[in-house]
Image (cartoon, rainbow, N blue to C red; front, side, top):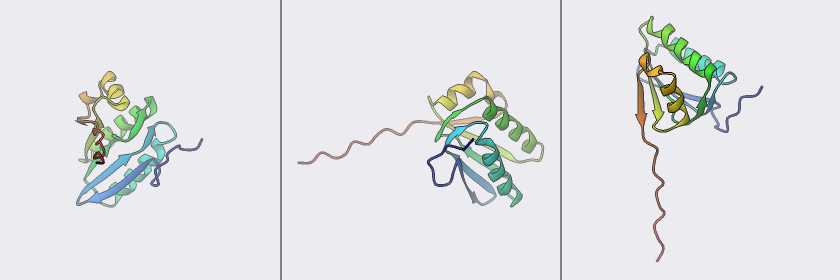
Length: 124
């Protein structure tokens, strides 16, 4: 199956800021996407990153395969001293799924609000 993502970077964009790999996920976090997301993060970690900031704010949803991958990624890298922080949008499908599964008991979740639409200035 093809990975559905309309973003030019595919399902994940990763940049390095100092020793931290900042990754923003686009589209679903599912069976098709997690191998690509995981590979990109592993490549970044191999370049010397000691922390991963994973932003799931643009992710459409996370399914059981995505949750399992996230938990395994956290366990595997925590044992090597790599810090993982995960950000989700408050009220999103991703946040609700992670809350229902109580993922925040093992992985701290940082929540940020939805951006409010900015009204265009009225023309006079």
